[in-house]
Length: 540
Image (cartoon, rainbow, N blue to C red; front, top):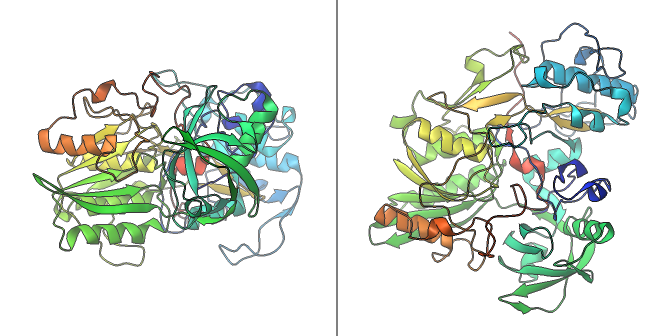
């Protein structure tokens, strides 16, 4: 799947020459930064949310005339949208305005709702930034985590209509292949991580593990220079249906004939490879779960019913190595189905904590997401009644996926992790549209039943269970390194000897680690690493 519209600011390691090119496509050769995940119900708060407004303050306003309440300039647009919002059925609220109005809205929204609003530098001037998006990009905390990573690695924007389509149905223009950058600088090693069913990639018989050698005649492994890098990034993230590029892949060390891939509308299949594995100590369920999007709910319910009806599994291996998050209520329903009502009844899946302004006027009850026992349509959910689960993880396991881990641990379910350290995002936001751009600014932190939520540097694998992402086997193959280690952990209580020596970077075992800051999925939209929640309720 190829979600795009990733701004060049998410190219942290490639250098100014490439970042300055303002790539609209994927950050293939850089290792994109990301967002975080969760939400449920209608994911799109297209209307303006009620917030606590603050009186004008000096400095840093949209027009450098002071911070104004966002509500006073909301919908004042340099290019107002006409027509009807397809999500609400109502006309867009846009009115004629200016870029300064839009920048003033951005500054007010940050001051009112941003979790770390007191840490935003006060010396910044809106006049120094040509667009509202450029202004938004710098309005965040400059502080770092204990490990030295940026505290806020998750600040981003999206075209509102593109976001609507992606978040609701996972539909995008692309080839239907997700790629992983084992090494993003020469000699590069870019692999197919998985492919979507019924996509151009599957139609071309492409599979996990294939290495990209050339694109449109450009040597992906060794090419240098801004022009080549831009061309590779653009080809991997086509912007429109019908866009074609020629790829050469290497499979099992053998270069293949060139393949022309033409971008099509690709619909994500978030739940794949559902199977029951018979072991000497019982039956184990396995499923690959890639996205907490609306369509995943029915697929997760079907998977759980498969495990219950005649399968009688004793354990579950939940493969979320590439799951960056999404809707929090999907995560809550998944956690509920893994455990049992006796364990989760009356317990907190996640409690949201906001800045000291309580910007959305929420009561304590409104900030609590319980373990949700019914589907979106109100039907009772099936449960597996498991007291332990093994999750396959990596640097792209983020936010809502981490909420599943954290929440289950919060009610006493044993959660073993096999693979790599997760991305570290206990934060999330209410996405907010203004003038056709949806802004994602961190507005809350989530904690579990025990009040635990400080994992800004991620969840580490269970002791001895750091295992490389094995591109020599297909996902769900019992010989694939991470799944094999999980099955060994279940049967013996420990991962195979030597597992911890394998780098989580992939095939190249001579590399001590990936050469990019995780996540290492090129082309991954920041929307894929998010904890998204429904619009805040109106004030009481």
